[in-house]
Image (cartoon, rainbow, N blue to C red; front, top):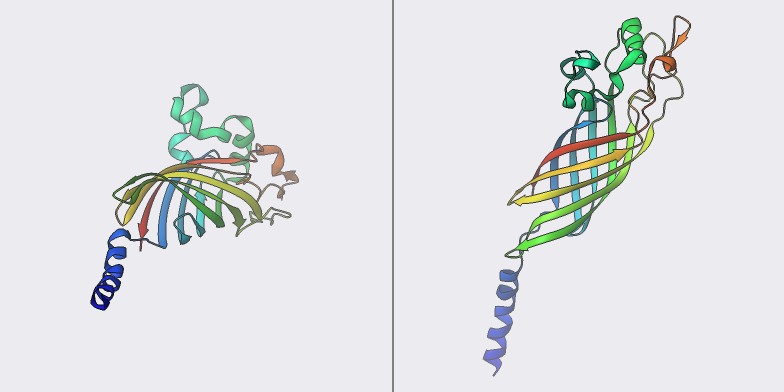
Length: 222
């Protein structure tokens, strides 16, 4: 009887191990997307998962409007649907005056993004999460809230909210994701109150106080 009990206890760890799938706590994410600020958005982020359902994320996000040269060079009458959607705020007289007068056609931004992350497994196969919906609620912290053209901007915002949702497909150690994010970030906040030649730039820049982004992400887990 004692030998049977000892053998049974020795088998417990092996039986338990056979039922446990590998859980990756660390993720490095590379993200690229297009947003309604007429900018390309790139981000590198690190996520630490406290458990299979929750974790924290820290990202460095960069935005650059220089892609307007390709999408927005034609007149508004000659643009196709993709150009019309992507160009957004570069239509019309307002930004034309700003570009021609100050030779600063394209705005840029560099932001830090801390967030809390929630994971919702949608479909499992052989104990593995094949499809997962992720939700991240966090902040945008602008590293350059006041930009300098000739004179430095004053009173630029440095803090914005940021919400992000995406669907991930399990590719073993890698994940492929597609999603949408939303923020009250405005890429022109860092230069909106600059005076040049007794003219305030606010009159030549359209107010676009929200940023929506569609994006793709490749994630490496370890």
